[in-house]
Every structure is written in C-alpha cells, then in structure tokens.
Amino acid sequence: MTQPGEESDPTRHLLSRRRHERRPDGTDVSYPIPLAEGAELRRAVVENGRKTEARLEFPVGGTSTVAFSRGRATVAADLLEELALRLRPGFAVGPVTDGAALADLAEEIASYLHRRT
Image (cartoon, rainbow, N blue to C red; front, side, top):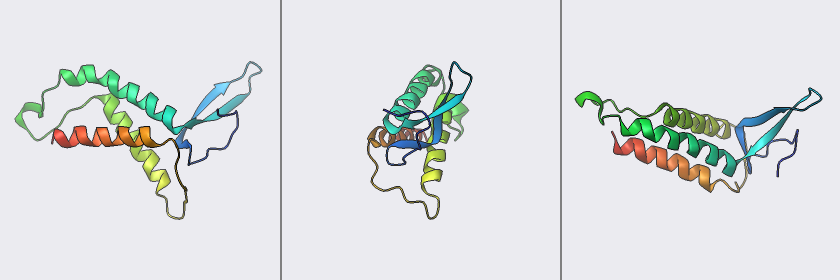
C-alpha cells in the first residue's frame, strides 16, 4: 500500500505519474502509483477505445496509414514516457517487481500496431 508523500520507488512504482488528492484541510498530497495498478488503469483506457477501433478500416482508405483509438495512442505515449524516464543515462532502477502487467500491455500494443502495418 502506498502512503501519502511516499517517494516513488522505480522497482515498484510508475515514474511518470503520481495520484494527487486534496485533503479536507485543503493540503495537497500525492501517492506513487504501483506498476500493476498503472497497467490496470491503462488497460481500461485501451479497452474503452476498442469500440472506436472496431469501426475503423485497416488500413485506412487503402493507404499505408494505420488508424487506432485515441485511448490506445495515449497509452502508447504514456508507456514511452515511462520508458524514457527509466532509460535516462546514469539512472539505475534495479530489479523491478510487479512490472509484468505493464510489460504485457506494452507488448500487446506493439503487437497490435505491427499486425496492422
């Protein structure tokens, strides 16, 4: 369980996002988001976009353009942002725990895009 004000641990938490809340006394507090929870939230965004993708023609208009939902694009951008933070020169993460769901989601999005190109 994450605690208010807890520092992000890159072996267990997302680096690119934190959950922000306002307490009843008006103070702001932020919580690190566990990797598995981050994957679950992003997977829900991709799932919501499937309705849109079902209506899209692949490839678009006989061109080499591939269309996909805004949700899938947002999640792909989020995953790339997270990767960029983790690959900064000199940044050491150590063994990651609970990252399998996030890795699976990234692999699924990559596979989806490869199949349509």
